[in-house]
Amino acid sequence: MMGAMNRLISEEGLQAAVGFLVRLVEAAGAIVIFSGALLGFVRFAVAALRHRDAESFVPIRLDLGRFLALGLEFQLGSDLLRTAVAPTFVEIGQLAAVAAIRTALNFFLGREIKEEREEIRRAQEPPPPREAAP
Amino acid sequence: MTAWADSAALVLSCCGVAALVLGSSLQRWHAGLNMALALWQAAGLIRLSGLRSWQNLAAAAVIVLVRHAVSRALRAQRQL
Image 1 (cartoon, rainbow over the protein chains, first blue to last red):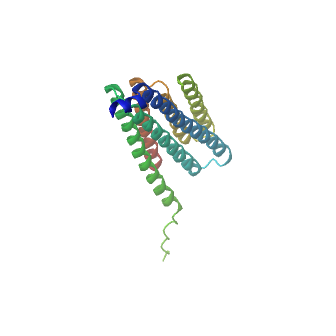
Image 2: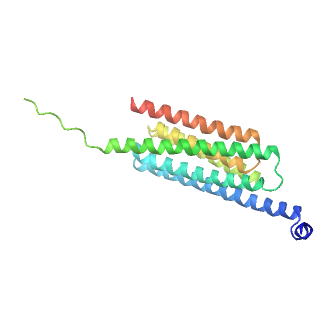
Image 3: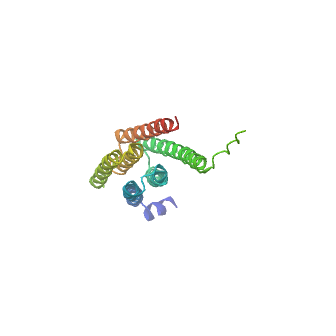
C-alpha cells in the first residue's frame, strides 16, 4: 500500500507541488498588499488636495490596514503550506513569528477602528443644549 | 520574487515619503505621518514575501509596534 502510494506521489514531487503553491500564495499576498497600499496612497493624495478635513483620512487609513491584514493572511497561508512537508525548526519558528505579527496587527487594527468610530460618533453628536439665562 | 518584492517595497517607501511631504506641506502632518507609517509597514510586509529571514521578520514587527505607538501618541495629542 505504502509502496504504491510512494510510486504515485513521490516526496520530491510533493515538495515541488507545495513549493509552487507557496510561491503562488506568497505572490497573491504581495499583490494584495502592494495594490492596497498604492490605492491608499492615491486616495490619500486626492483627499489631501480636495477635502483637507481630518475625517476624510480616517477611512483611507483603516481600508489600508484591512488590505495589510488580508495580505498577511496570505503570507500566513503560504507559511502553513511550507510547513506541510518535512518542516524544519526554522520554518516553524518563522511561521510562529508571522502568526504573532498578524495577530498583533489585527488586534491593533480592530482597536483603531473602534476608537475612530467612537471619535466620529462623538463628533457627529449635537452639542448639549445651553441653559437659558434668567 | 525577491527582486520584485524589493522593488515593490522601494516604491511603497517612496510613496510613504511623498505622503509625509504632502501632509506636512498642506498643514496635515498628523494624517501624513500616519499614512507614511502605514505605507512603510506595507513595504516591510512585502519584503516578507521575498527572502524570509529573521531580520525581515524583526523589521516588520518593529514597524508594527512603532506605527501603533506613534498613532496612539498622535491621537492622545489630538484629544488634549
